[in-house]
Image 1 (spheres, rainbow over the protein chains, first blue to last red):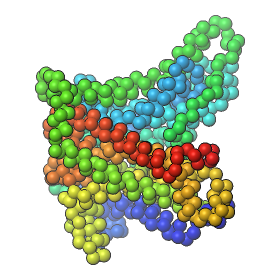
Image 2: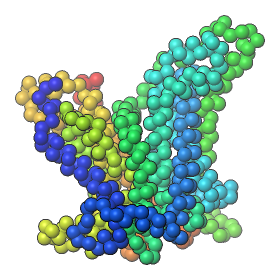
Image 3: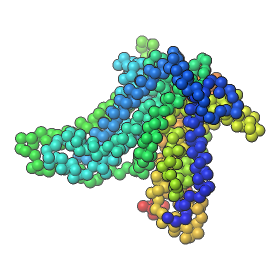
Length: 277
Length: 330
């Protein structure tokens, strides 16, 4: 490796600064969550954790405006269901696009790619009207069903299936008498596992974070997702900041856990996607 | 963004590999399965993605609200009203202001960060994770945290300004200041993500290009602007388009940056109300005016298309003719 590519101490210094700026707001969120509410008015602001986390958590769950526990459960149901569905349907369609021959394949694939560029968020008004007609307003299917498939997922799995599933493997399965469905379930799906994991993680995080659409369609304060519970806490008439921050910390924690455990795969997924896209 | 379509012939079932009795069934399987497998995506997208978007336009041509029993066709009336709507244009200016203030520094910082990460680092994955972690946090949570960081009296930012002898800034009630605060939030979340995308593209640049340039006497800065940046152009354009689509629809950050009464307005005097927030305010609580809200949605759609097109044209022009150096690299 030539000298050009060696990292100088200055490089590390700059990276430490960048990493510090990235991490500090998250760190500070946990600091405030673990202190009593008067930490907010202190200057200089405290930057080390206190011992109040337990008390804040119990006050948060007792808060009758935020329905925080319901929010957590709802978000787990929504994000879990959406993740399983997106991964399954994306693998299925990705496999078809990468490995099966059919009329209109390339044209339909271009449609899939085009859907990634369409700001579907701008369709929330008819979507809301549709949910009213289906009688899904204020209910979880309203936020689950529209998210069950993504063009991004199909495209990602198609790209991965193209390289990870060899034609010989499929051929061998056919020789053994497998139909297309069994080939998919027993041969293709296992081979897609690494990409499916990344897609699952990204989908879970996106769905967990979703705000605009749940905010539009789940108007019953007693049946929120966790992000809507945060909104209720934040907009509350009397703001107890340590309690609000306990909420934001708990809402962020599952995402951070996923990231700490699978960060390498997520980074790999983002970077590989970038090269191929 | 280029997409490589697989030109290789896909697997066809080998003739004679099946028993006679299952032959017809198998042929049916091969013909129909592909459509069956892609159907869930297309059906669900048609119902919950494409149809609402198109139907938005239909709704926008009507006087249509939640409670009204009939909704008469009014043609372009919503649009003419909207084009004369001061609050709408106010929101457009806010959105564009936040977009420019956030995107330009974000991409420059991402380029710089990618350049740093593209060196022989110890603990490579650790650094990458550290810059990406903002992207995986909850947007709503971050908006609330930043709302406090930028608080007027006890906010940490104003405290820091005070330390260096500057006057506190009214981050929530001054229009441009609120744009800056919201941009800071957006940049905090997306800079690291874009840096990784750019890093991936940087790693695909052949090293011998740099070695040749070094032999010709080009220093590192020169190499960065004359080799790295031009070769990254397709990726930069990709990042700009993604930032345009996302940035012009900005909602969660400005919405939760404000609390108190009517936060959907983005502050008492609509200091940082974005177009999506304005659409929301009209289409849902308190007004539930679907027709007018839909017109906002379509004008926003047009705005996104125009800004994306302008960005691409401008970026194509910058830094030499498109594709000349790209051809040499591949």
